[in-house]
Image (cartoon, rainbow, N blue to C red; front, top):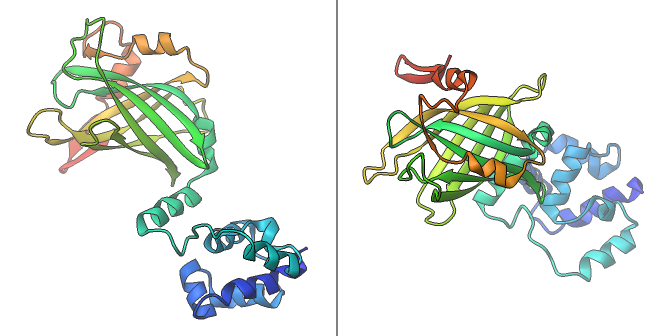
Length: 269
C-alpha cells in the first residue's frame, strides 16, 4: 500500500503555500521530504507519525488507494492538526513525542517524602499515582495540608494533577494544585532501569504555603508501593512527620539528607 503514499502526500501538501512551508512546519529536511514525494523513500515510524499528526490523518489512511483516500478525507469533519493547535499544545506534544517509553516501567503508586516547605523539621508524606492516559503519562498527588498536625486522625489534603516526561535519563514531573490552581510544582527524579526503582531520589521546587509564598527547593524521595497498592493502607501514611519520627526508616532519612548548597546551587550528593 505504500505506493499510494507519495500521491496522497502531494495532495495533502497542496493545501499549503509550498513544500518548503510544509517542511519548515514539520521540521523535516526538504531533501528527505522530496524523497517521500518521489516515492524513493518511505518515512520511518517517527517521521510518519509526525506527518500524520500534522495533517490530521492516520497512517493506514495516508497509505490507502488514492481514490479511497480522497473520498475519505473529503467526507469527514476536519479534526485539529498540529498546524492548527496553539503553541503551548505543540510544546506538550513535542515533549510527549520525545519522552522515553521507559516511563511505562514507572507506572504505579508511590509514597513521596519531602521536607515541608513551610514547617522546619517536618517531613510530608504524599500519595502519588502514575498512569498512562490518552498517550500521556499523568499522575495525581494527594498531599497532606501543612497545617495538619502529625497525629491528626482527620488530615486535610491537597490534590495535585500533573504530567510526567522521561528525557535524558531523568524523570521530569510538573503538577498544579487542582482546586485553588494557585501553584505549580516541579520535581526531577533520577530513575535507574537497572534496578526495581524501589526508591527514587530527586529534588522538588515549589512555594511555601504561608502568605509570603517564598520559592523553595527540597530533597524528595519516592518510595514505590507497586502497581496495585491498597488505597486505604497507602493513605494511612499520608501525613506530616517530625524528622526524628521512628516510623521513618534510616535509609529514607539518609536519602533526604543527601543534598547541600555548593557554590550557590542546591545539589544532590
